[in-house]
Image (cartoon, rainbow, N blue to C red; front, side, top):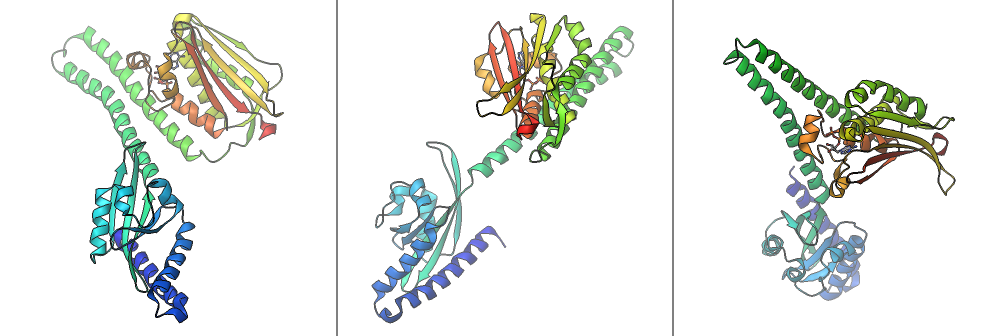
Length: 384
Ligand code: ADP
């Protein structure tokens, strides 16, 4: 059954019910059409007032008979007795109402509003008969969030394909060169193989990050329940990144309290979180020669406690306009720099998702020329 058929079915069932109900209500006044119609309208009004979606009932000339609060919010100019077309100003909808008034069946249309914000709607326009009253019922449904999710999914697939295609094209190009012009050039072959290995790793990292993201999203609503101490986790990450720090000539300094910082967490995800933040500091802030990591216990005014882990570098910093978007998938402040550093553009998106799952949050502060500070805050396990 199509959506339109279904809408039609509901419309007809409602119409039948309203017809009977209106007849019953009219009872002794059956001869009095107007009283019967008033009764029917009152019933419709009572029912639609409880519905969250905008609903409008029009007479066959397109004048509003009743509407609910959802409809009033959507079309503030709507007035009883006035043509609804003035308030709705959606040509497709006006045309559908005209068709249905002229005896047509249920119509389903979609339309978009651009001002003040972009919103998408579907509308069912159905004929209904309420005793002697022949009317048209418009039910609207807000599709904006569905459309937004669809758009995000399409963007994500386009971005992921593009990110994978770039190293793949480089690999294919070098293979062709080595099979052709550089066939006997041993020095070039070695250099090309080095680049090819780097590109292959880049693809592997990207796939790894994509899989991690989807795994974390799948578990987004399941709170981690194992008590873990963040201090040894951060120290383990710093130890693992020593080679990178040395390569970049960066000194990493960790300041941690003597007592444990216990949160309910997923160890692997927390390792990933700090690895991303500290690795970014080492890569993008290398020119500052220093990365400071400060772990602390914060006492909130409401008596609850938080673990705070700040990763501070002294590199070039990040222009303010990029800060709000850094945790979006594939967003980079400097695309060429990220690529040169082997970045996937997914690191901070992973950080955000991991923190969300742990009921934590991320703050980013930066001043051009003075470096950047990424601070993760997580609620203490006893405060969950
Ligand atoms: P990537 O894989 O590109 O490193 P991230 O999601 O980890 O992706 O980071 C997104 C972007 O944020 C990076 O491409 C970089 O432009 C910027 N960025 C992240 N951390 C820092 C930092 N410490 N200093 C300057 N820029 C940073």
